[in-house]
Length: 148
Length: 83
Image (cartoon, rainbow over all chains, first blue to last red; front, side, top):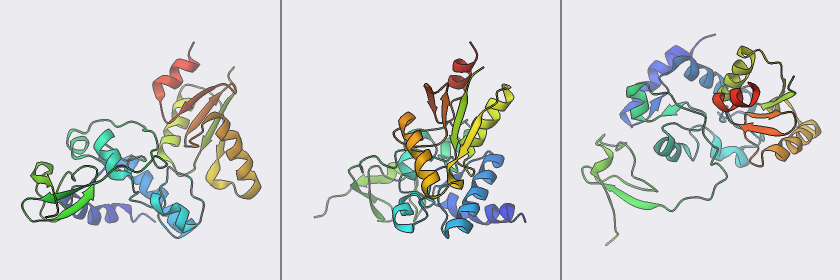
């Protein structure tokens, strides 16, 4: 049973258009996706393969892939906690990534509202996204947004 | 000889890398796959892990019941074991 190559082929363009990249180390990506698959079968949801699930959905929900802290970890460290998702920089340069601390239980950061100057997409996050998930322009086309 | 205990998850890639690193260096170790434990057994193991790593994250390597390496840190592990 190896549906992974097919699954990756389907998911990749969808993700990349939105500014998300799988780890270019295929062996690692495959192992992580297999771990997600194991957890899907075990718990009924794709819990992070590198964290311990309780087996109950509500307390586990924040670490169902993609986890709540993925984007902050990618911005700070170049990869998410388990290493499935990496920054564009890591993806292009094939830079090595390292094991990072788990910030799952850290206090939530303060969010600002960001607006894409090109298409008007608005989101509330600590930092603007790397790529506008709607129109695809880069991080620097976002500005902090004040409600009038 | 060191007494090595690894708290790990069977699905975790960083845990696998840590195991490979230890094996490549020729060390034997005990491994606890926390995701494969349930009920009282897991509660006991989590209590033990908490003594060494309050954040209870994986992998956590305990060397001789004292030195603790959290996460896959190949250089730190090598430094602690190759004296």
